[in-house]
Amino acid sequence: MKIVVASGKGGTGKSMVAGNLAFALSSGTPVTLVDCDVEEPDLHLFFPEGPCANTPVHIKVPHINPDVCTLCGECGDFCAFGALLVGKDRVLFFPEQCHSCGGCMIACPAGAIEEADMPVGTITVSHPEKNLTLVTGTLNEGAIQSVAVIRAAKMMAGNTGWIIYDASPGTSCPVVETLEGTEFCILVTESTPFGLHDLALALDVTMQMGIPSGVVINRSDGRDEKAQQFCREHKIPVLATIPFDRRIAEVQGSGTLIARIDPSWKDRFSALAKDCLALWEGS
Amino acid sequence: MKICIPSSGPEPGDLIDDRFGRAPYFIIHDTNNEKTESHRNDAAGGAGGVGPKAAQFLIRLGVDMVVTGRVGGNALEALKAGGIKVYLYEGRGPVREALKAALSGGLKEQ
Ligand code: SF4
Ligand code: SF4
Image (tube, rainbow over all chains, first blue to last red; front, side, top):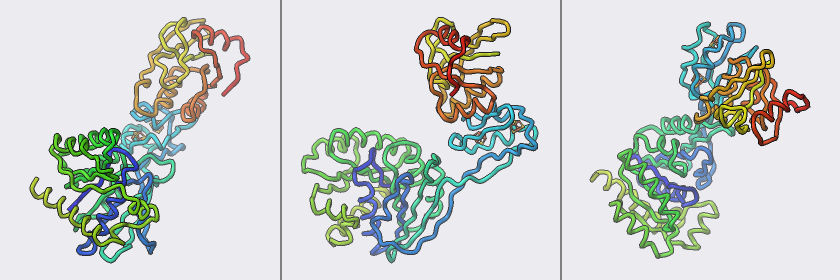
């Protein structure tokens, strides 16, 4: 089953939920945990270091052969993203604007443009626990092609067993790319007004994509009426409430997982996964 | 020589707009025939790459010199690749004033 853990904004404890969920499940069944928060991947911090395999992610970009180019200007006019500029004596390429559409290659009447690979990120695969595979997507510094890196990470994670994807915070293209083709979304929120606002935005995205979802209220101070009411109104189940607890915060701060050191939490996260499965099967 | 000034409107009396790629108009003065014309900047509303796109447009028009506020990295690089000199003008008044300053010399090249 493919579950995305998402939240409308950063700092809600999304990675904590994803990490604990994957760890708890892995005691009984093979799990792949995919860090799709490629601008700031952090799930690996919860697991022991070990051997890992790195694969670069490339995108296709134009490469202009100056000996063949006639400076006719066609490619600059064609590119809708302003990634090419035909100057007086050379063509400039702005890689951060390029969407890899390949159109300039077709537009060039002189055949001066070839396809070249540009590295934008890395996929790291490791096996930090017996039944757990961790796939981490990392976007290169300065690169903007998050979506390409997320797509590569998801591809690398494959399609079998339980797959847990940790989305980047927010509701933009990278989140949509992470949700694409998955079966359920856990929305992590805090029961503050800001938290609810961001939850509403995130829920909007999952609903538009037709992906069933449930809510985990994190750092609850016990006064969750607003969040509960919101979920009732939008007919989404509250899957779990994680209290604001100093011990959890300490465990989290020390870089480990509460499910690893406390069997009762491990059971709670396993139950959370089973609930997602049941909701998906019933949806 | 063609001098271009990014502008908020189509007339020399309109205020300059110093967001080079996002300026809605370009006013271009040709010193050879003393004519002034204005062009709408179609790149202005785009999501990205507006600087290079606007630069491409000016290169096509044969502009020699742009007079404006600070120009960002890509746009500056693009203008220079097109052989266009970029001069810094930090005033906020009408285009006419910027043009006067450009014609009298003394502006610094960016
Ligand atoms: S591949 Fe597409 S986006 Fe990239 S430079 Fe060519 S036309 Fe522009
Ligand atoms: S379309 Fe081809 S020949 Fe024309 S400027 Fe671009 S690269 Fe050069």
